[in-house]
Length: 254
Image (cartoon, rainbow, N blue to C red; front, side):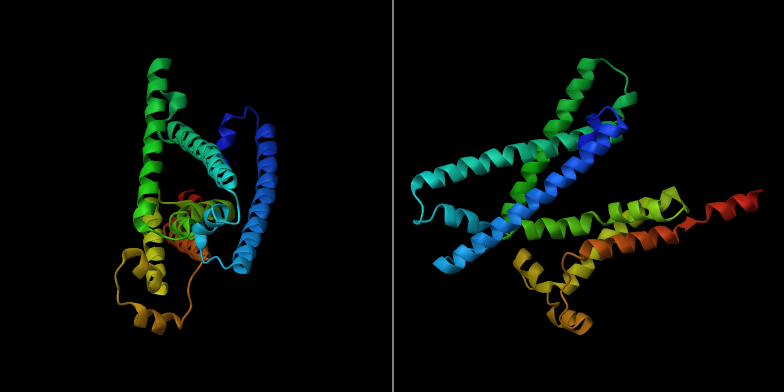
């Protein structure tokens, strides 16, 4: 949502855009939660055994509805996916071109910039395709659970950096920041594997032999969506350890 504000000309317009998008997203998510609850109630009452991502298509394509409903469902699903993917790829392309390639200060003709921008766009489209193939290979029954777990492991450094910048005035040793941003997700992943061995056994189609160790360490506790908070906390702690008090440093130099 934040990357979509790059194209907004004024700060006031960006603020209005964020507030409007936030309101709309809350309403849309509430409607989807309501739809999910209704689908589960309907499935329980009609004896459908489909779970996770299979539930919605199982109901739409079941004998309870006509073939027309199934066709409408498939068309609606495709029409909903295209704008979602398009918006995500566009945001990633804009962010990469401006933040990584520094397009604002890039020299060259407009044609060369456009060619490079299209290359980046196609590159992210390929990344999305690979992610879909990876998900198919993993064969997880609930993509939402997979995404939440994936985000919990990868978004921690972003949360930790943001909190550190907002809550403290300490200066970071820039050469060590990347090590903390790698160590945080790595430690979080190891913690999640130890805490949820059954999930990773199914994911990797093997037995990691960690069930007994997990029971001894955590007593049956299974980390869930709070994984991202633990990740952010680990990152924040690491950043604190590699930082120094800027005011004290300035006083010492003076």
